[in-house]
Every structure is written in C-alpha cells, then in structure tokens.
Length: 355
Ligand code: SF4
Image (tube, rainbow, N blue to C red):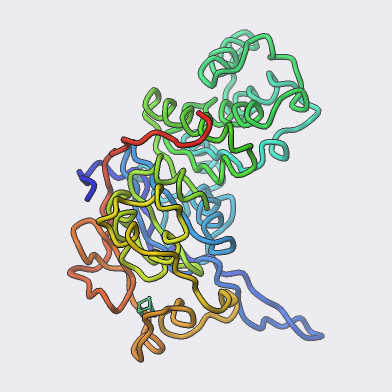
C-alpha cells in the first residue's frame, strides 16, 4: 500500500450535494431532482494530487465545478485553505478566485479565438490586479516559459497552435495568479495520445515547482495511475472507493472499482499478485440507472455481481475499512466512519504514452 503521510488539508469537502430540479406537466411543477452529486466527502492535502475517476455522467466534473463555486451546490461544505467557499460573499469569492483555478478539457473551446496569447494569459491579471502593462507583459512571458511556449508566439491566435500548445496556454492562464489549488477537468481527453503524456508531465513539473495541489478528473485510468497520489472512484453521484493509488490498482475493494479497473490492460494494472492483475475483465450487466431515479439502498445494487438482500434497502456509507482506504459497501464493515484522510505524494511511475 502506498504510504499515506498526513499533510495539511488544503481542500475539505463534506456531504457535497448537487441536485438539479426536474419540472414536468403543464404547470411545470417540480417532479423530482437529478442527483448529479449525492453526498460526496473527501479532502486533499497540500501538494497532493487526488484523482477522480468514473464513467461519463457519474458527477465527477460537477464536483470539480462545485469546488470552485462555478455552480451552486444544493448542500454540503467546501473549505479551501480553511475558508468555507460556500459562505463567501460575492466580493470575498472574487478575492478568493486567484487561489483556485481550473484547467478545462477542451482547449479549443476554452480559449477566445479572437484574442492573442498575450491577451488570453493576461486576462486574469486584468481582472484581479492593477499591474502596469509592462509588469503584465513580463508575467505573461514568465508563464510562457513555465509551460514551454516559445515567447515569439505571444501575439499569435489560438487557431495557429496545436491542441497540446493550446492546452499549455490554458495552463499558463490558470497559473497567472499563483493559485494554490487547480481542478484539472479531463485536461488531456481532447488531445492526441502522443502528446497526452507531455501535458501530464508538464502538470507534474509545475506542481513541484509551484507547490500546487490538484484534483485531477479523468476517465483515463492509466494516466490517473501515473499522476495521482490517491484515487476516488465515483459511481452515480457518490464515491464508491477512495484509496491510495497503489493499493487501489493492486487490489480494488469496492465491486464497482474492481470492475472499472478490470478494463485496464494487464500491463497497466498491478503485478500478477494483485487480484486486479490476476483476473480477466469484469463485464457489468445492465445500464447505469438515471440519477433522476436513484435505486434505493446501494446505488450500485442493480449491476453489482456481489449484490445481496441488505444492498437493496440499506445505503452503505463511505468508511475506512483498512488504514487509508475508504469504501462504501456492505461487504466491508468500516472500522471507522469516513474522515477522509489526506495522502502524501507517492508518484514513481513514468507515463507510458509518447512522452
Ligand atoms: Fe455490491 Fe452490495 Fe457492496 Fe453495493 S453494497 S457494492 S450492491 S455488495
């Protein structure tokens, strides 16, 4: 199991819910709610990378957006660097923004095609500082150096760059105000496989150089294995398992995590001693239920190969079942309820794609 030294918690999330109302009928009465995120709790230590994985629609991107208050959660508490971001006034939130930033999935869509690199990267400086034009120009060039963009490109437009270069621009913009915490929302999903590892390596180097803390949202389990210290597996709006990376990939405990990781090529799993490495792919039957009609009990019970009676009526709570490992499943009685431990850095592998 990966070592999990406890660091200072930079991000603390407790009971986060994001429900979207559903209206129906002629009078558009409220008929229910889509539970995109349904009681998610975790914390991230300073300098740590927490991977957040799961199928499309499981709520992982909504968690990322809620953390930065890009959408208003229905319930829960989010503390970043000791401040409850959900309680901040608009003015206080604006002052807080520089410390928490986001790198988006699609660099093409997230960059204004009519703006030059210089104006894109300096945009946050215009909004949050009263720096002179000269000082901003110096900062833009520093940031371009930091992300590996040629300074001569400063007056070019996004369409003149490759996808990887555009993502570097997006990262430079996110770094402009010296943030502490960055949500990376599928930052490599729109890139060619050959350059995905370059961008991940860049994110790792920037983390070391600037002491950044990441929430790395991705469906790419191989890349998450490379970059994350701990990994949270989400299913239908809830965390099924949150474990140190090495322990999870060697032996996932939650049946959903086990099925998800069984889809990885054997070379990307643990050694043959681990269950995940020593068995074939687990094919789940049935579709993911609608988050507007959550099944009672365990939300995975309609597809779980290990379901038993209790699962259909009683919702399992996320709890610590082994040191540092949190699982929400009746098969694993918790030794203590979830007080999501933070992990330490334990990166040691190299990316396996076109680096
Ligand atoms: Fe499967 Fe039951 Fe565990 Fe849910 S609680 S994952 S249905 S065994």
